[in-house]
Length: 493
Image 1 (spheres, rainbow, N blue to C red):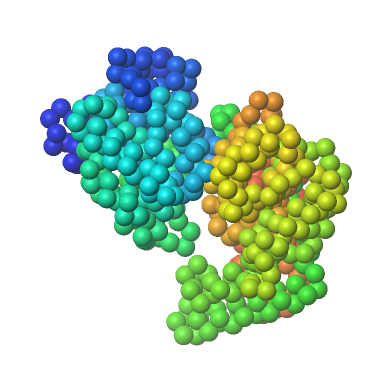
Image 2: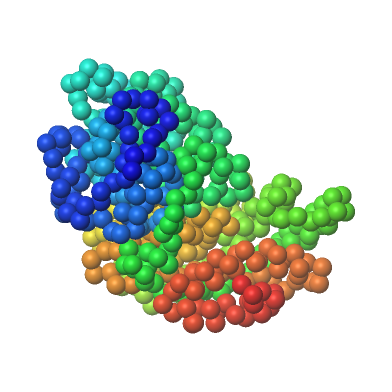
């Protein structure tokens, strides 16, 4: 079965066929496997779901989005597609676009396993532009067979990179890693339209609060390909490890409860005003006026003081625990008056100073060189834990993680899906992971605010229940949540 592809189909002999997906992946070793050209590692055996993903992408004319659970091998699947394209049509250029710098270096390590010699195009344009333009020239003159370039989202939109894209040949594949980020307007506009072969990778391609951005992403890369590979699938097939889930219920302080009640009242009044004006309440997500109030409420919950007390109690009896990740709030209830790193610093002090736990912080300000050192120290056990905000949410591959303590999560479901996948990656000797999740209990509310709170809590509870349902101790975890569900009449979740 032969399949055509927009620009590519105009070239003689340039058609895609379904991959053979041979049992012996070593059969890719042909005379074409020159230095820097895609070649499957001899030891690599693709899993059945990875083969299905490849087949679906080829069947969709070289377009599509792979929605696969975090940690289930999207990178390997994507590079296997590049190898197959090189065999079929002499693919000439592979472009990988990542949201963060540390993912560029991570992709580079994986690419090298596939015989590729990538150009790392990020930060100072002088560090890579000349190298890229020279290799593209060599490609066009016939003195080079293949070019691999890995870049960041921010570099993609810059003039330096855009000036080179127009010289890329038709036999180019673009891979968008953590592709949900590329649905943002400026990034989506910068995606090269003349590249026909397109592959998006994300466990959560749908953009939060942004249906238009989600559609733009699918319009460019192609739809989510079937079958999706869910977290349940990944655990069942051994792609991710099993886990235990322990919700830790935390009360607000008196001052926090008062602030929480005030915010809930304001949210309720805003909803009531909207109902009077429009005749309908609508969804919280559709109400632009509510977003600042909801963000304030989320920051208050994220930075709840008693989480530090709960952390101290949890870790005081676990001083020998290793390979632990601590996820902190990235904001506070008094924005501008308190540092957004307040909780992170407090957690690091409790663990490192009070309890003698060997930890280090890991933030956006941590340099790439230092991040690599921390990763190695963490994997070796020299560091018992990393205290992070958001930069360990997406794409970072540290499979040695055995335990996660989640002090704060945003309302965005992508974040907890990414985090859970981080912790569940297989690693030698790692039979099961452990997740501790701090859940703030809302204060007692009066009658007019209880319904507002019920609606606000509904989506948050879904996250906790999903965590619980897929855990090995599902019954125990669900019982911990039962009182909260009863209190707000949410037993149907």
